[in-house]
Length: 213
Image (cartoon, rainbow, N blue to C red; front, side):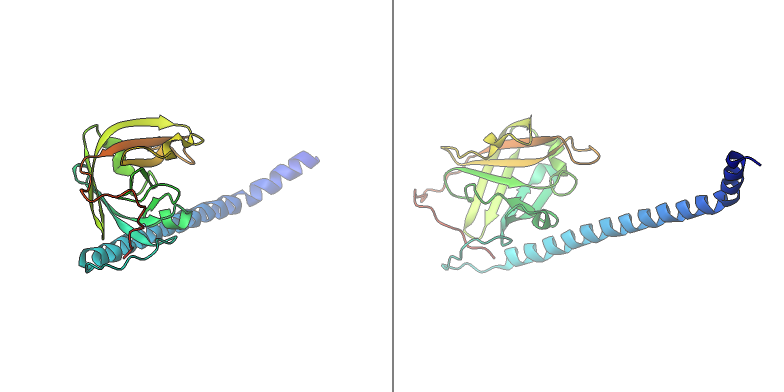
């Protein structure tokens, strides 16, 4: 018997075991993947439910606390899209797993400048695929409610930091990955730009840090 035929015979003998082992390995991997996805969804849903309840029942207070990484800041709502989510200071992977993130270097809601919020395309910002010019966006914080109107959308490179630049007016920018149904790390970013349509009468040029709840 030649070495080649010996190897082929050995492989044929062990093939059923190899196939069964591979089958159960991939089955287990799939089950674990689904379990993890379910855990992430459940964790995000629980966090959002708790923080929304806290936000809706929070009592007005004159005390203003500093905004810190991971602190809940307010609520983002786009009624036409059925999008309603708590947003949090920061944009770390841990934060974006259960909330919309506010990019720390950008303006705070109510301040003059560019407020930038970001979230995953396959969770909170999935509805943005259907956003349209003129859609209304509401930002609610313990210090006030701010209304915005969508002016435009665009697709940019991940290295395009222009979307984070300050603005002379009160604006809101929403950023997520693109394409929405891309498998794996998406190569582009989808950007929504909106302008504030109701400027608070008592707005001051002094920068004020809104309290979190």
